[in-house]
Amino acid sequence: MGLKKLELSVGELALRAGIAPSAVRYYEDQGLIFARRTAGNQRRYHRAMLRRVAFIKASQVAGIPLSVIAEVLAELGHTESPSKAMWEAASRRWIDDLDARIALLERLRDMIGSCVGCGCLSLGACHLLNPGDELNRLGPGPRRLLDEQDQADL
Image (cartoon, rainbow, N blue to C red; front, side, top):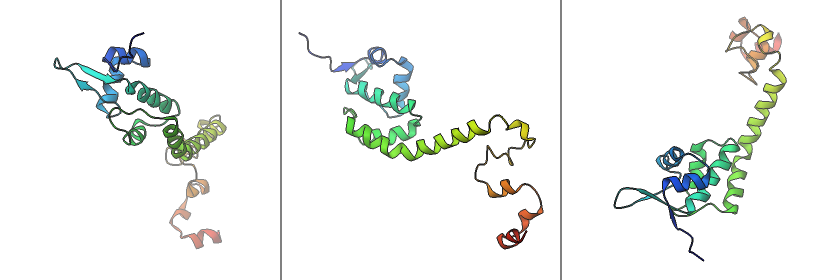
C-alpha cells in the first residue's frame, strides 16, 4: 500500500477539488490557499489545500463572499485545513448575514410581480430597492422638508 501524496500540482489539486486550474491560481492569489515553489518554479500544494478548497466551495454555495471566507481562513497556518469545529464557528458568524439576505429575497419574491407595475420606475423611490425607507413609504412631496414633529401633525 502506497503512502498518501503530501503535495499536489495545480492540475492535480484542480482535478481532485472539482475546480478549474485557473480557480486554484485565483484562490492562491487571494491568499485563500498556499503553495510552495519547486526549483523549476512549479507550484506544489499541501494536501490540506483540498480541504480548504472544499471549505471555500461550501461557503460560496452559502453565498459567503470570498473576502469573508478569507477572514476565517486567515486563522489557519499555510498547511492547516479547516476542521468541522471551524466550519461550525464560521457558520455561526454568518447566520445573521444569511438571515438578512433571506429576508431580502422573501421581500423580492413578494414584490417582484408588481415592481414595474407600480409606476414609480424610480431607483430612488422604489420600495423594493429601498426597503425600510420611511420617507419612501410616505411618497414624494414637500413633507420631506418638515421635521419629525411637523410630519407627525400631518
